[in-house]
Image 1 (cartoon, rainbow, N blue to C red):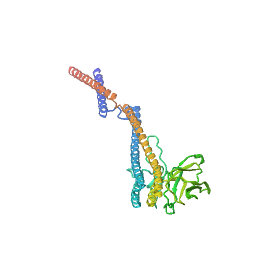
Image 2 (image 1 turned 135 degrees about the vertical axis):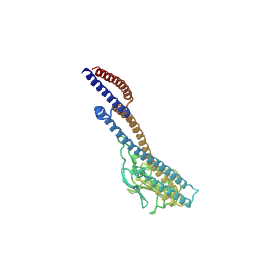
Image 3 (image 1 turned 90 degrees about the vertical axis):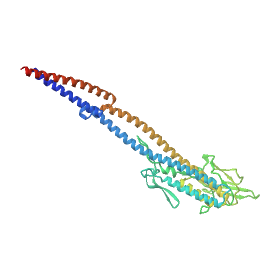
Image 4 (image 1 turned 30 degrees about the horizontal axis):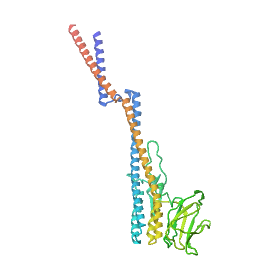
Length: 406
């Protein structure tokens, strides 16, 4: 009876050892301790949470990569825009040179037109998914529509907020291209023109962009500066407030290169105005880069041999181009900030991935410590299994001896 009990005990021990070895072999093959939830419910739940977090991080990282790619395209495109504006600016300066005649300037105007069209194409550039880079909060196929020589923004202006683990995936095209102040940002200066936009002044006078000398004295009204001759044949000027109809200055002696100052602003006129020539001062408004380009092309093309018209066209174009370049450069800088933010988010997400991966390894027992423990347990189980096998063999021998002896 005792031998039978010993036999059953040895058999159970051998079977248990064998099952443990099989389990450990499965764990070693899978390189983790928790193969199913029943192995360790607490660890399995922790592993599931870690897996979910890793999946979410991966989704966020893939979305961020797509956003980064779009903004990189936008930043690069804005770099091309800035280069084209600079090329346009160089041609405008070139057009103001006295060595060129009307035919030469007409040729330059054609080059300017090509650059203008290229800048418009850049503004309608799309990302790899076919979405406009400068579509703001939403647009059609092309956010910038060129209709009848007037470019409009056919999109929802605005910028997606960068929040959480994402960045905006578009740039506000309206802020970038359609928000350029005219003149110096406070007032505009130009020579008198007819209905077709051609300068009617016959003298050689032109003016700079002007500046504000006393903000508190500004009226926001329009003015005209008209030139005449006094009794001695000297050139004089009169400044009239065209909004109120009153004179701000009357019959002042004109000296080329000297400032004409009134009501908190001043401007410097050079050249020799003819009798009846007029310079108009208006309030600055909001224009857009494309109108700036179109105006420059038009005024340079129509200036002909009029020295004053050429000088004023160049001055006004350069001021407007610089204002437009400021806007596009600001948007390019913003794109750079978004890319820097994307880099910081990626660094944080990479660190988070490393930590959660470590948590997952510990939870499911795939970390190095667990691997070492499994190897040790397997070796111990092998030793125990060998001992149990020997014990089982001894009991079998004893049972056989008793059977023969009986």
